[in-house]
Image (tube, rainbow, N blue to C red; front, side):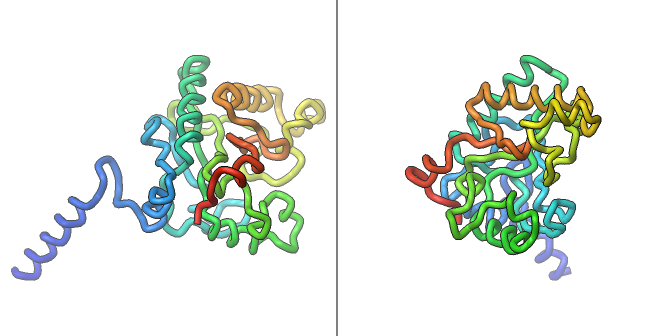
Length: 226
């Protein structure tokens, strides 16, 4: 009986420590907050999050986020993302942004780099030795469009596809050759439209990647996430 009572008290303590509306924050999530990042759901709870590096079905084939499930961004980028969501809802109330990656600690960037260095995929990953990329400042986000059920729209390739079919400057040729559909191109264009409206800039080689500031600005005025 004493053992049961102690177990119930322990469970109650854990429940009380958990934040409202979700599980307890992990060590990495608390570290991100200490470094000034914010959970995007503090800006807009309607944006679904499915972090692709918390699973093995990404281009590295490995789980890179051991204890990160929330999507964090720098407060400026998080506010801009919420603005993009509001704009999308104005244009297409039936659709939503869906986030697959956001702020990324430099320690994870190193793990990612170690997976791709010496392969053809290194081109798509920022080298930590050179300061990393804008994900490491909380100033970049990887995302797509989804319907009301959370099902992603056709974008021509899966998110995280490393190849020319994901390049936004080749879309007309990709449609003509049948590699992506005209509807996929329209979906990509809608995503770019709402993200640009909020101040983000697309990446030429990845239809899903958007930067809020330049790398030079990040290095001059902001700190990388450890």
